[in-house]
Image 1: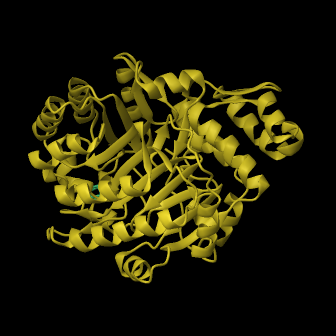
Image 2: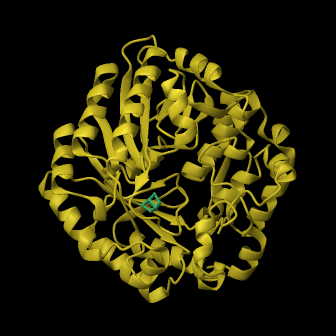
Amino acid sequence: MKNINHLLKKYDVPGPRYTSYPTVPAWVGDVGAADYSTSLKSILSGDKLSLYFHLPFCENLCHFCGCMQVITKDHSRSAEYVQKLIHEINLIAAQIPQKPRLVSQIHFGGGTPNFIKPAELTLIMQVIRQHFDVLPDAEIAIEMHPRTSTREFCENLATLGFNRISLGLQDLDPKVQKLINRNQTYEMTRDMVESLRLLGFNSFNFDLVYGLPGQSYEGWMDTLGKVLKMKPNRMAIYSYAHVPWVRPVQRTFEDSDLPTPEMKINFFETALQFFSSNGYQLIGMDHFALHDDELAIALKEGTIHRNFMGYSTRSDAHQIGMGVSAISYVGGNYFQNAKDLKSYYPKIDQDTLATHRGYILNADDALRRDLITQIMCRGYVDIKAFEQKWKIKFKDYFPEALLNLANFQEDNLLKLDANEFKVIDEGSLFLRNMAMVFDAHLEGIRAKAKNPTFSRTI
Ligand code: SF4
């Protein structure tokens, strides 16, 4: 690693993760159901759709959690939620007059999606198939927690056509798990993966997190070794986002329990070397895929995409999120549903779309979104092709940004000339920082914020 202290001093700053552009703090409350309805109606027959369903219930609260969840051990609560979700699917479908409504990706996220009953999931899938044409090669994925999983639920997934399973592992070190209140042993995870393989599932994604309280080099290496034994097809290795001002539960551990930024970089570098030498390809900033996985192939062919569900091979124009707090990107604009059940349920009961805020992109936003997506997905931009596509001169459109990029060039993290923007060496650790250079909203967000808005980039 190059002079690590020098790089951390320069680049370890609060910044967005760029799962959207403009980022969520720039979105506004006066974008509502009427705007969303207009965007849904603009969907053309034959446009490919990605559907996301948020199932928020979890039995226990993990103390590092940054997701929208509802903590309860009362499984009967899912009945009302599923009823509202089905109502929302009906409402959304009614807003899309064109047919066929082709679906190439379905993702159930949470929360803990396997909190609901098998029969409830069956019902949701039936309603989806009533309204949408799910393509034969569609990716149908679900996030699961081994602790809540049952054999009946897994068998039902196979019957319903699910073909990708995503498991959160975070870190298998018992000391870390105790601090984050997540009791999930290696054996429990391994047994679940083995039984799913016996049911015919052969595509697994694991989520790991570095920067968690109590993490040590030895414990992390042990986790990486155990993960390799289970051989997932894909992994996401996220940097823990410490935002206790937004997630007060993160105050349950001491700041002194957290690894230093130097340790965090070391954890990621270790994982990068370990998985690169064991058959995995780094995808974007923090994802990995086996070399024969379609995600790694899409990266090589330059056809990789990024949406709220992570990196994807699907170039869908529209992502429709359903359920509490779900985010949609439809017709080139963003929309987010009501963020808690108290506001989500009444909207659905009134037969209205549950939109709570959003963002209508202008031409400059769309151009920058494309550029930032290319940086975050591939660390590479063909500048001539970009100029042609958007009918601009790169150096005239981004004079200030180009000056700011000189920093990354000096640190040998970026190669930049009139033809290409190419992230090199450890530059992939700083993709967020490079994307920030092109973010026209960042200064405004910082100026308006009363509290810190973003987690640190490292
Ligand atoms: S299971 Fe996932 S969503 Fe639920 S509390 Fe834990 S990290 Fe958050």
